[in-house]
Length: 188
Image (tube, rainbow, N blue to C red; front, top):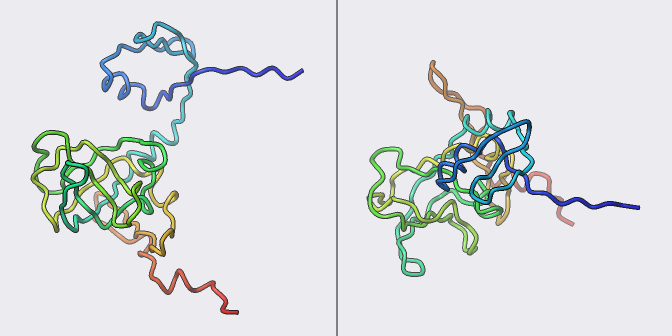
C-alpha cells in the first residue's frame, strides 16, 4: 500500500531573507524549522551549492524605454525571461538596482523584458523611478539560474557570460548570434 505524506519545506539558504522580509522570527533546530508566524515545525532543506553559486552572478541589462503598464511605470529592458526566467516561472524576487545611481521613489516600477509576452518580467514593485533609457540595471544573485536556465525562445540569442575577479574581467562565453541559432537546422 502506498502512503503519501505531504509536508511543507523551507529552503535554509533563503531562510534568513524570508524571515527578515516577512518580519517573522524563524528558528532552526535539528533539521527542522519553527515557523513562528504559524507556530508549526516544517522540514528544512539546504542546498549549499546554490547558496554559493547564486551570489556569484549578476545579470546586467540595458533599459530600452519607459512606459506605463496597468497604471504603473515600467522599464522595458533588452534582457528578459529568456535570459533569466525565475520571476516568470516562480515569481522569484531578486534584487534589481541601477548600475550607476540610487534606488528612488516608491516601489511601483515594473521591470519588463523585450518580448510581447505578458510574463516577460524580471521584477515588479521596484524603486527605480530615476532610471532612464540607456541606463544599466543589475539583477542580483542569478549565478545558479542565469545562463543555465536561458532559452532561445522567440529566436533570442542567449546572453554572453563574463567572469569578473580581482584582476579584471574576461569572456567566458560570447553572446550567441542568429547564425548560431540556425546552424543545426536542415532545410528540407
